[in-house]
Image 1 (cartoon, helix red, strand yellow):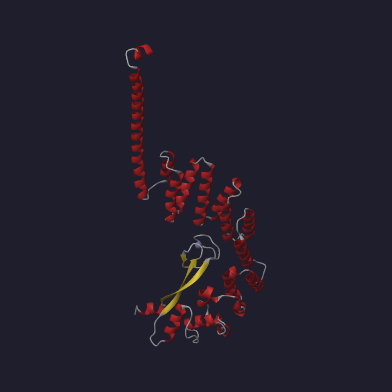
Image 2 (spheres, rainbow, N blue to C red):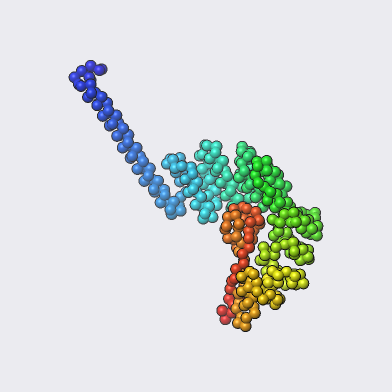
Length: 349
Ligand SMILES: [Zn+2]
């Protein structure tokens, strides 16, 4: 064989021929790969166009993952667009479809976490709970699963389970002091054996131990034991519950006690129930007090927003657990001046 090839050629030419052959083969391979890549890109672009139109189906995600080898994280990111739009059902079906094709255990766990979280956000508490229990079966130290199970148990008012989960998280060195105080407070409020009087006294004692639960205790007292609230007003910081005080029924206000407290006097002067304060440290109350005393009637009122001290998100309604970041008792009330109800009505006349 070498006789035929090398006999009448320069050995250097032989080497050149081999290189040329390698070059041709790699060029052809490259060209073929380029063709395949272009073809895939074209289809991929077609898919993306569909995605822009919001028409991507569950199967398309599987396609992107299995056929086009789009990284797992990118697929998850694409599917998360449904969550931003509040389309939980769609996100859930994409996660479920992906679960069938993903082999890697870590990715599977990540998908299950996303699925559980989406069920939770969509309000499917029982399904979410099942998913997290499934995760804990093969990954008992999964803190995300435990923390979300805690939220679910709280929502389902299953406080003994919540306390068990807190214990597990504690063993994993998680800081659960706030959770423990919070769940124990909810447990007392929800207790079916204690009387309202017993609950009030117990909550007040718990508050003295930890003022983090102030708002929960005040809310309870204002509902079921107003006299205990007014008689212990000096234990509380009324500024932190200005919204509760502002909306309190006239007959539920103990004006003798109000007059012993500067801030409360300002609040109810601003509200127009009494006419004692001439000014206030709080700008919004000062404006209301001065307009109440002016001869020209200006209809302004107070409105309240709540800022989570953890995630800084603004919420129109108070929640003891931030719906955005899940932190507990992190809402701070913020008063703001708003157009009065009567003015809005009179402008119609
Ligand atoms: Zn938050």
